[in-house]
Length: 370
Ligand SMILES: Nc1nc2c(ncn2[C@@H]2O[C@H](COP(=O)(O)OP(=O)(O)O)[C@@H](O)[C@H]2O)c(=O)[nH]1
Ligand SMILES: [Mg+2]
Image (cartoon, rainbow, N blue to C red; front, side):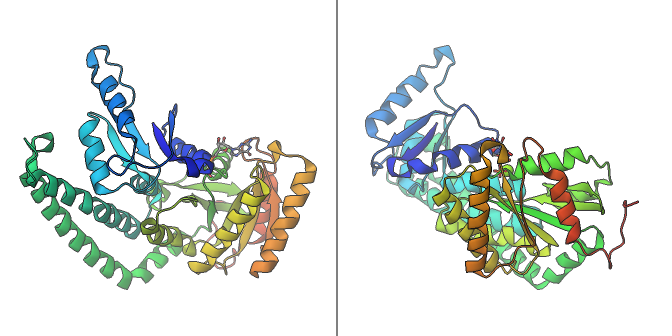
């Protein structure tokens, strides 16, 4: 079950898209008008769920997972998980961290995500300890305050260890860049908002040009693959999508994970032609701002407007004009502005040609381009 505040209605599609990247489908949606202080959900609703979930004879639980698309207070988490048994509870931060984990390629990105997960967890564990000490009978799930104190200590140890490791990595960062260059293939990153169609495009590109190359690329990033273009093979990476409702604590990690695209040779900024104009503009501007923030704006950027199959010629023309205008305002000169349908495989050849125009092969050992 997905829980959204009424005022966050407009994030519903984004939330469902995020869940689908984790293969979570068939989601019930519940809106809350005003989060309850103790439970986030309304108390009588909590009671209802907990009752129907405990009628366990039919083995037919209402839900296995409740995702609160907002930040939960530690005590809300505590109260919810005590009241509704055998149901996992995530808040927005834990959901986003799970998605980040899917995409984290470098050790640095992985550690940053883990560090944030630990820092997100600590206040919750502290709350358990506090409440169990207040005389809750038989510690939560049998472990009591003592179990949680042990957990807290080990989380803190790990926190210190990761922070130190990250420092070390920072000093060795140049090595990472060197490793990338060693593979000898041009690197192309697909970026864009959640549900723009990045994964669809990635799959279309990697499937249509099926390259059975060395496995080495799997180690670069879980979402990188070889793609054959008219000018040889390139590595394409499907990156973490931008998310509109992103808690502050996650933003830094997002920037640091996405900043791996600095090591790519070219960026495909994917936009969604089926977005309402206002959203389209907002997303486009934010995307460019993020690129500036992580110092990736100097990279060759191709703007690819996706989902042509959902709109008519007129919309395409208008959106292209607006895209050009935004680029001018932001002082950015894209190498190309194209439109495709990643799903219907329209315009893919064109995209590959455009990638080729911008690839500098001169200093690279060009493998696979005969
Ligand atoms: N109609 C249409 N739908 C598309 C196209 N590309 C992607 N989609 C759909 O958009 C949704 C989000 O796509 P996905 O690739 O997961 O987006 P991501 O979040 O950017 O990776 C999915 O339901 C796709 O089937 C397209 O060219 N046309
Ligand atoms: Mg995706």
